[in-house]
Image 1 (tube, rainbow, N blue to C red):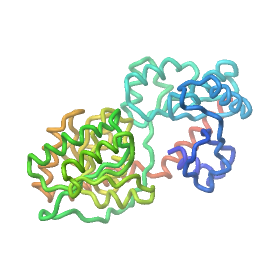
Image 2 (cartoon, rainbow, N blue to C red; image 1 turned 45 degrees about the vertical axis):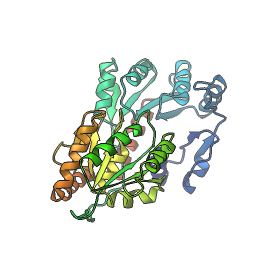
Image 3 (cartoon, helix red, strand yellow; image 1 turned 90 degrees about the vertical axis):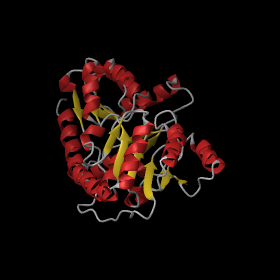
Image 4 (cartoon, rainbow, N blue to C red; image 1 turned 90 degrees about the horizontal axis):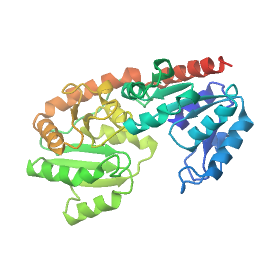
Length: 343
């Protein structure tokens, strides 16, 4: 999201944009290479004083400035410290990508320093308000995803395995990929003819590969590794169903990308899902951790293949008008001009 919106703002002539980063190796578009500021930030200590000092020095060298942050992390806290001493020289816009009560409390504690909190879902802004953040300091936005105006794709027929997909971080803490074995067992017990492709890497990838190998599931469960951005659309246009087992999200970009490409979401009830999914019309929403319900929805679609095409088209129709970059870019241009106009 950071790279995409910065790239678009630069193309619109806003040249005084910089991305604070550590010294890691990242895929940076050519247009942004001179805009990435690599600072000696040490991740082995969450709030390392040396890292915070480095960020503070850089921010002070750029004042007056607007700082846009995406995590409750060192850059955000450094900006708050600078604002405490130079309230008229720095504005803070805090974008919140995760919907968790603990995070709402943390962000609410820093409200005096923040000009605006932007949640990626309405659920997040409502959560902030529950914890005392003033309504005029909250807003929400829809992150852009690539979505063709007309959906062109096909779905698997009844004689072929129904195609399931997941794309994202393969971890247990948030994405709950440790529940995949239980889900697979439930699908197998229902004699569902399926193929499940998992795109991405993470700390649970090794255990999943071991599970697949130990149980001879290579034909039904495939770990395809990390995809390039240009491969995402093709991945989802090849799938009938998008799965998410997460305990929490902000508003899953992966689910939105799947819907944009006509895959039917069958997902757990996390932040933001109700903004895009109407249960039974363009997807299904089940309780967090409820693998029985997840398997039941997949079984239903397996037995009613004609519903997949209809629901997939409905998913695309829901996402297309709200996910366009042009709309998102206008939102940010207006917002930045408004914040700067407060000086």
